[in-house]
Image (cartoon, rainbow, N blue to C red; front, side, top):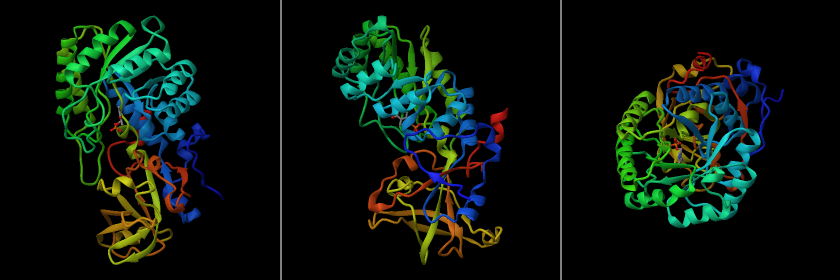
Length: 411
Ligand SMILES: *Cc1c(COP(=O)(O)O)cnc(C)c1O
């Protein structure tokens, strides 16, 4: 019985929508397939539930940040959860989303774009919204679309934020300083059917007040610009749980954003958000196999050049559990110990400190499921050293951490 299939980077996967509850469990798949290559386990029901939860709670429009996980089965699950808009950053992402969802709203939210990507997005894929943080990019967008307000062009100005408290600080690379952002809003206004101010606090941001501060700065910029705007886009960065982190509930972030937005009193303006991690992190895990044990270090078949780059230098801690088919959890009764992992490549940087908490008797041949990897996991993998034979399966398991309950999707 072949329960696994090859990963597809861009081609849409077929999935039987009625069969969500008939999907296998991770344990059943490991028992049957005994995979010697990494096995990526996708939980479409959990992703749809997390997306539905965000759409229901956020006081505005929800755009999924495609870079976080562009797997077609993930996009389909996010759509099932009610997301109809997508934040894309490249021509490839735009084409992928358009091919899968002819009616989706697609927004090109990268501030520095290739001219050809702008042309292709506008004329072939019906993308109308583009972000920028310089006057040069505004000129580029106007030249390559040949469009303006009358043709429905939407222009978004990316505002730089002071260095924040996010796990991944993204303030250094993009964004116009406040005075420049105000000037860009003024310059863009005559050309825009939809004018927006956009910011991104950084990824895995644990402090709801980060959005309040960003919103206050946005308010100053809008006032300085002296032109009306239609959208405030608060970006992504909404956090999820990891074993060493329990973030405030999403509702706390939404409440700050809504209150801060209302305080700006912008007539006719609406809110957008661009979550990535918050929708999909819990929906992905990877099952690795132990190839050798050396004391408290386990040599496994996936690593920082595969789906586990955040477990390397960035030092994220992920939940994990032992899978030993046929032993019905007896291994789990053993005391847990902290282990470090080595990935399969020959690079000594291919090391994950963890700690990964596993039964003391973990040994060669055991499988380990590592969770919370739906965001920035499989999509960052490489073929370095020839280790690129991971398989993708869809499973019915719940996420290994967090609140996303598959039952919530029915509610
Ligand atoms: C990466 C990114 C996102 C998504 O960030 P998450 O931390 O995954 O929510 C949203 N908007 C922009 C502009 C991004 O670069």
